[in-house]
Length: 75
Image (cartoon, rainbow, N blue to C red; front, side, top):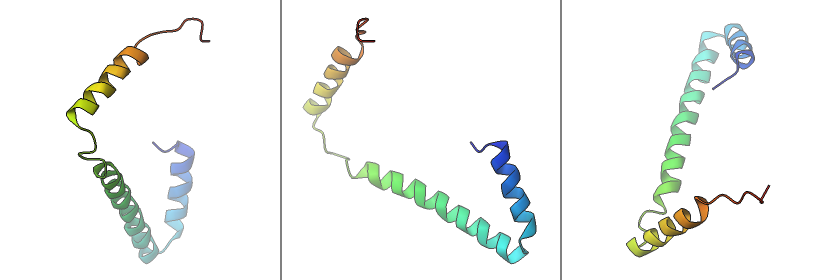
C-alpha cells in the first residue's frame, strides 16, 4: 500500500500532465500490474509437478519437526 506522501506527489504530478500523458501513465501502470501478475504465475508454474507425493510428505514432516520447536537458548 502506498504512503499518503507518495499518493499526494503522484497526484500532483498527474494533474500537471496533459490528457494524452495521463493516458500513457494509466497504460503503463496497467501493463506493470499485468506483467507482475503474469510473471509471478509463470515463476510458480515452473515448479508444478516437481515434487512427488513422497517428497511433499518428507518436506511436510521436516517442517513439522524442525519449525514447530522453540529453542529458548537460541536468542
